Length: 360
Image 1 (spheres, rainbow, N blue to C red):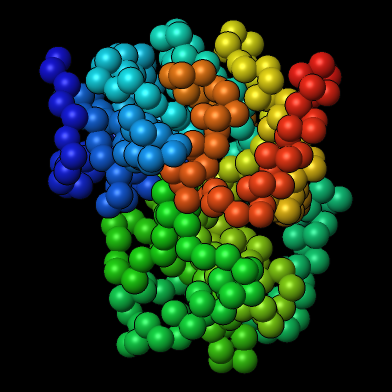
Image 2: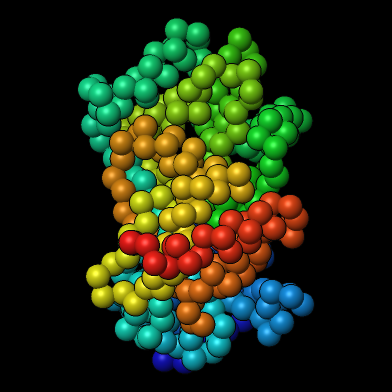
């Protein structure tokens, strides 16, 4: 079959592949406008972000988001064709099967964190493991928090929603990040679900769920976006998810993905050619460098849901060196040259020899 790489791809031509094979939590995010698509006709596509930078990547990289959108049996076929067309590629948030295919093609694959899935059926809050969820649910119910589903297009004005989003971003001290966290859209999107929480007739939180497909059916959802006012009752975000899951269960949906916890419980898969030094540095980063990103806080929050955990991976055609990881972070908009960056380099420089000698 012939392969074609295009700079612009009509989303409607990609949707049949997405609806049949978009079974990863990042699959729906592959339709973002910033991405380009390598299409193997009749098989599927690979979504990637073109990245070029005078310092970080003078010759340019392609940053692949998630697994190829195709039958997993065809991963090796489509990746082989894609790599023949692409010299410098970094893959992020891929699963074990995709990692196996890349390993067979001679590409290094490293663990990069875990993904957490919650079964919609019989999501039991009894016992110790979900005690915090039970506490949050009870608090929200006592305080009269109500959850409802409503399309963004059904709001007469977006001012309230924009105010909610802006208040959340200001409280978090952050900004909107795209690509791995698909930005919130003020337009209706196919199969995307929007849930809202209100308290005393005021909108206090929202959650967006992207569809996960298999065989032309929605089988689950990815909890992609949440926004919560600082004054909302503690646990409102989790309560929103649990209430949405009740609706999904009634519809026969299988699970909700909470997405990736970066650098948490990093493990390499037997048979993968990992970069040992990078693995140790990433583990050290999770433990010691939470001032650059709340790795432990992210993981701790998702652990409270006691879901099913699977390892996710990164890979790079030029080897999984720390430099390739930094290129990835820069391409995703997560790395700026500032005091924090210099702190990172300083920490790693001081610890490098110890990390290399230490145990994995």
